[in-house]
Image (tube, rainbow, N blue to C red; front, top):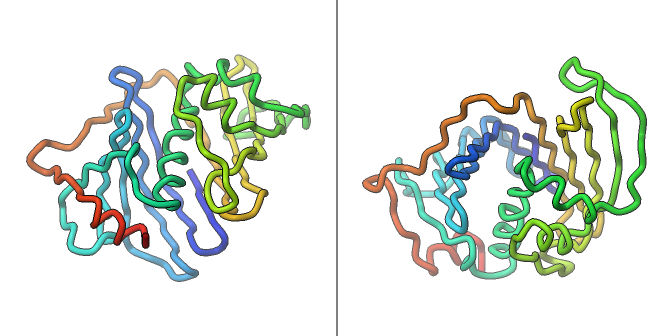
Length: 215
């Protein structure tokens, strides 16, 4: 995965999804903040409406503790944007890709290309974020100039069996421009994603979240 935003954040790392139980994890292994390299390697585990966050040096005084964060109750505009981003990230679940196909508008076949040594077909489209969330049974994001865009530009690379090998999401509406690239290396391989042990988890109060999010 590779996420960048306005030159302020550039994060590269890995992600994995486990279907039963349905858990998603993402870990950054190369981070740049405001143009300066940062040694932190934060990790997040998403279980339904709950996220477990380990800042690995990015969050002051966190240590080895995992913070339990309610995604449906993050404060302020930034909190809402983070919640929507993680919620929409669940749309990468292969089980939901067909469900949201109708939310992709202006689909264009851009021809054949190579991803990971495999010949794939490249499609471009515009994704209606609200329609996609509703089709997948997820909370619909709230579009605003400073929050989540109503549409995203999407490039999708599909192999001969119909499986998505790579996707790129771009916000071109202003407000909070970002670029997210996700590449799938393997499907149907054993993946182990677990929530942290209870003894390493700490509930985060709203004031701490407000301080971190700058609200």
